[in-house]
Image 1 (cartoon, rainbow, N blue to C red):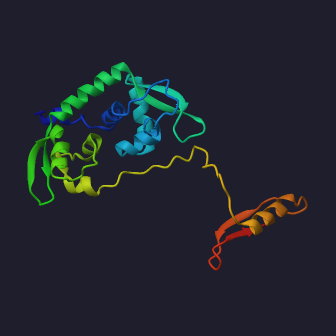
Image 2 (image 1 turned 45 degrees about the vertical axis):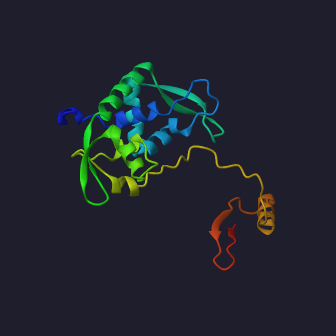
Length: 215
């Protein structure tokens, strides 16, 4: 069992980032990089804001744990930065994972009882009990409280933070149906060189649920 003072920094955000990347294997030569390796995917996985993750990634790069790559991310049209563990980073992440796997925590169960259990034994136990069968090691690391407690109720009900990446292109429209009247009006206004050069689409009219176009 790890002593309390040795636990303090084990599940800090930087270590959770390294553990997440350790489980998200990729190759520099892969064509479609998983979004899990991007800043957005990392932030979502470890439950931290993108600004926090940005600073954490810079610190990890400075320490030699991470390397910056550039490639085609899955479902993205443009090349994008993503991050991989260096050999030194992998070695360090494996050490953190091993130390955490042997850490004993208090598992609060759904019937208000609790039991002492090693982190490495939590997932097998929950699967045996058919509870939270979809959780990952990282979910457990993210849920450990300061008093070394893991709540099954929290694992069951906690929703991961969702981050939206506005830096990428909008989805491409393959087929477009309807709105002939509206598109014809828009085209007419665009072609009207003498009129105003601003067109404002205000959303939906409540009466007909159709776009309200204002020139």
